[in-house]
Length: 369
View 1 (cartoon, rainbow, N blue to C red):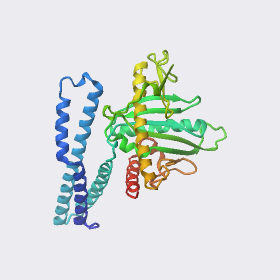
View 2: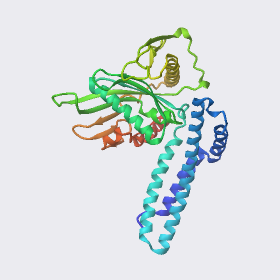
View 3: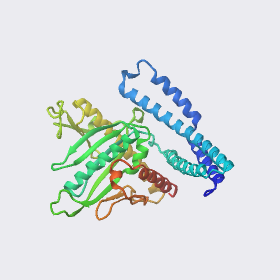
View 4: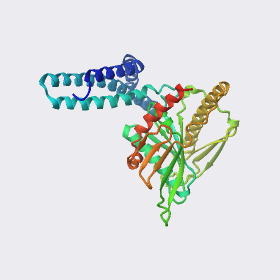
C-alpha cells in the first residue's frame, strides 16, 4: 500500500462535508423544483430571454447537485474497492483505488473553488471586453487570440455566449470586442481574468522575424439585472449612431444601426454593432453601460473602505499574465505563480487551472486585508 487510505477517505469526506455545508443539497432540491415548475409553464418561451435564464439556472442547479451526489457515491465505491482489494490481496484493485482517490481529490478541489464564489455579483452572468494595447498589429492579433480563448473556454463548459461588438483593426486582429457569457457564476469565474495580458513571440507580421512583446486588456463586469436599480438620466447619456464596420451581411453594414453610447459624467464609452437594428444595439449598449457603472460603484465603495482603514493598495488586476512563445513556451500568471508549458492548449480554452488558482489567490488576498 503506497498511501494511507483511511486518512485519505477521512480527508475526502471532510472536504465534501464543507462543500455540502455551503451548497446545501436540500436547498438545491427546492430550487430545482421551483425552476422545474417555471420551465414547464406553457407560456415559458413567450419571452425567450427570460426562458433562457430559467433553463440555464435549472441546468446549473441540477449539475451542481449531481456533482455533489456523484462525488459522495465515488468515495463510497473507492472505499469498497479498497476493502475488497485488501481482503483478496489484489494489488491491481488497490492501484486502481489509488488512482480513483487522486481523481476524486482533483474533482473535489475544483468543486471547492465554487464555494469560494460568494461575492455580491459572483453568481451573475458576465460581460467581457477585450482591447488591444501597445504592440501595434501584434496586439490586435493578440486581442483576437484572447477572444477565441475565452469563447473556446465557454464552449468547453457548454456556456452560451453572444458577441455583442467587434471593432476590427486595419491589418489584422481586433481593436476591441465585447461578448456575454450567459451562465451562472460566469462573472465569479472570469472576474479573475481581468487585467493586462502580455504576449511574447516572434511576430508573424515582421518580415525580419524579430521578437515582439504586445499587450491586451481584459475587462469583466457582471451582467445587469432589473433588480439592480442603476438609473441613468437621459441628460447624462450621449448617443451616436453610425454604420457598422467589418464583416457584414444581412443589412448589418447597410444602415446606420450601430450605436456608440457615452456616459458623460464618467466618460465611459460603449459601442454595439452586432445586432440587426439600432433599437437592439441601443438596448444592448445601455445594459453594458449599466453593468460597468454597477462595477464602478462597487469599486468606489471598496476604495472608500480601504481609505478609511488607512490602507490603499494598487489593483491586483494590472499586468496579470504572460504568454511566452519565444524563446521558450510558457504561460504564467504573475499573481498566483500558476503556469503551463502548453500555450497552444491555453489559447484553445484550457484555462480552468488558471481561473481556479486566481479564485483561491483572491480569497487569500481578501483574508489578509
